[in-house]
Length: 283
Image 1 (spheres, rainbow, N blue to C red):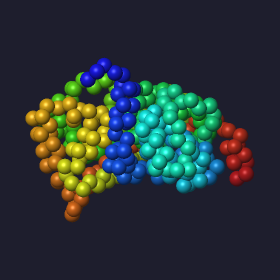
Image 2: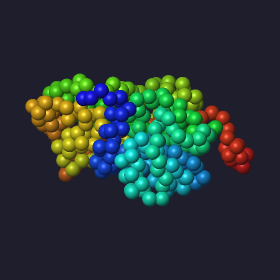
Image 3: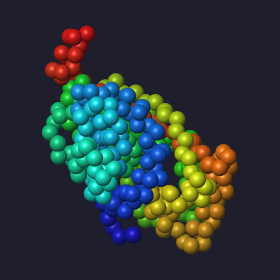
Image 4: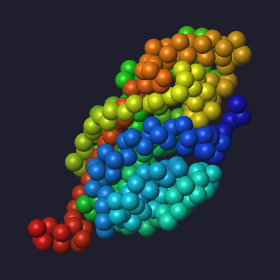
């Protein structure tokens, strides 16, 4: 693989996989949107920023709650897709780690499965803090650890057994770093957030076939997909068979149902904005 940065590797990966991701991962990642929006109290008169918005599913859901929404993503293909799928919602190109947005501009910031894809998640947390008003709320989701998010256990175990995880990818933060609530707390505290809470969101990934787990991860994931595509032909065949066999154990009638819980962490920017002050006085 050519020597590119982890940031550019991720950006190029999402450019390539935008539509496939929306089609196959969208029904899964959308399962945590309601809890995410509830955590930041999305609703009427709330100015909400959806960072790493991808296809825009969370942004659109926030708009349906009455929030004034802006979605931002660093992949132009994702922004084009989000605009096409969600007319009426504002989407702009931008980097989570260097937002071209004014400070103190939003009441809520959400990141749905984006933190694990940033080369500098600490910077992304700091930028979210910056654009929030005092008293504003921040929340993000990531996958739970592989022992709970079964699809990752199946795929990563198969790769380790029949191939290799060392395929020369650009070095990035550990994929499951924020599955650990203490790590979430440490990073958000350092960014200036308070009232940090973590919860698990139960989710089920429903696939039409056992083999769909392999093809979906290969074609619609960035890091995991690159690892799968860079195996030898012999290893690829063995990995695919192993994944298919293990996934088949989760068949329920005509559907494969894989537990894929999310970890949702929420926090508050300390202080009280003028709007929050007047809200409190009116109660």
